[in-house]
Image (cartoon, rainbow, N blue to C red; front, side):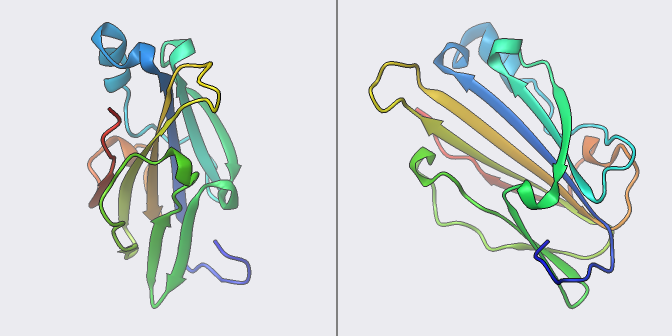
Length: 165
């Protein structure tokens, strides 16, 4: 949330980050990567913090959890007129695969949630390392929710994943 804005309802934020290299682009490794969940059970006491879940290729995509301040998550959240506008920031720009024009913010009413996915592709500047890839999944709920909310299907699904080649 931006400073100075009062929030009438709870905002629940879960940021799922998956990271891999070319080694997981095909075969069994890609199957394991593609099988990782897009949402996880929320730990107790998440709001006002954000729940983070990371999954790395080097750890065979085993999830590890954490918590960060919501302002550290790359999502713009703005409450106005009883709705919460949700729009992930796209960073860094040099890691973008080609994609169509960005969709507008999703405006949630209390009791709704959105799953928004963005992916990235990077190469080392000197070409000395493998390509690396990211998938960021933002699960954002407006209001109070049970701890298993992000295990289900969202009201809104925004898929901004582009081709990774």
